[in-house]
Image (cartoon, rainbow, N blue to C red):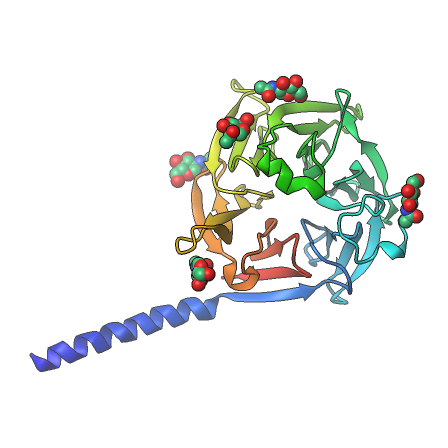
Length: 326
Ligand SMILES: *[C@@H]1O[C@H](CO)[C@@H](O)[C@H](O)[C@H]1NC(C)=O
Ligand SMILES: *[C@@H]1O[C@H](CO)[C@@H](O)[C@H](O)[C@H]1NC(C)=O
Ligand SMILES: *[C@@H]1O[C@H](CO)[C@@H](O)[C@H](O)[C@H]1NC(C)=O
Ligand SMILES: *[C@@H]1O[C@H](CO)[C@@H](O)[C@H](O)[C@H]1NC(C)=O
Ligand SMILES: *[C@@H]1O[C@H](CO)[C@@H](O)[C@H](O)[C@H]1NC(C)=O
């Protein structure tokens, strides 16, 4: 009897230690530091399987990460007279603020939402980008935010998070329960912008299906992800497919699932403070949730992008790009 009583706890402790240590050991996290003064890599666009990527930072620059040299280069910006005096500034209209970005791989053009300037494009050699659209239906964009490119057509899906508040007034937009955001599409052939959805509550992220059957758009303020049908019997209607507080960017994976950057409630403090990634299918069913709190603390993560089996993490508040693997 006494043998049994002592060996059972020892045995279960061993099992616990084995399970616990194996999960801890298999998770890795590393940081790719940004250049001096740069913060807030909000989104990523990978150039090739070599691992080079673009990201936009708070002082208006689009940076290019050269994987082989393991360093960032200044690549471009949208403020017409941006100078290096901008470096280190945060959300200055004279400097610009690139947010969502995506490459059209056939042309190597980089499409970018600059929060202040609107939808723009950078040629493969970089430099000062061209603004393609800064208003639609007579309404100026105040906060160009999420962006994705449909590779087959080259059409660009993007959001204006608000017609009333710019990036410096996000907290006010939340407090006022703003619902003046729009989902838009730039047609590469006609160069025209179409409003797909209006009255959105802080649409921060967008992801288009590989075959453009549908487009997903997140609403930061109401905590929802909508799926708008572009083709088929439900075309031009939408479903709410996911509810999760403060959803930001959403990125399609190679297999056709999606990673959503969002926030979870801390059950001790009851505050919405745990940065998470949610892996979901095209119906919004969550397959897996990853907690990034151990590396980001209370700071939200803006993007979770899968690339060659690792997750690249963006954040408006971090001076690094996080790389997570489990
Ligand atoms: C850029 O131009 C605007 C107006 O054209 C001006 O207000 C601003 O100060 C300029 N910024 C820089 C950095 O020179
Ligand atoms: C905020 O706006 C959304 C969308 O317009 C609406 O569904 C919701 O009820 C509003 N919430 C509050 C607290 O007013
Ligand atoms: C929807 O947005 C339009 C402007 O784009 C506005 O005129 C209209 O009042 C809004 N509708 C609601 C229900 O908020
Ligand atoms: C919740 O908040 C408490 C108090 O700040 C902290 O100790 C704990 O680690 C948090 N839980 C999670 C899951 O982050
Ligand atoms: C998503 O997952 C659910 C169940 O987890 C499944 O029923 C559904 O068919 C999936 N949808 C897609 C589009 O893969």
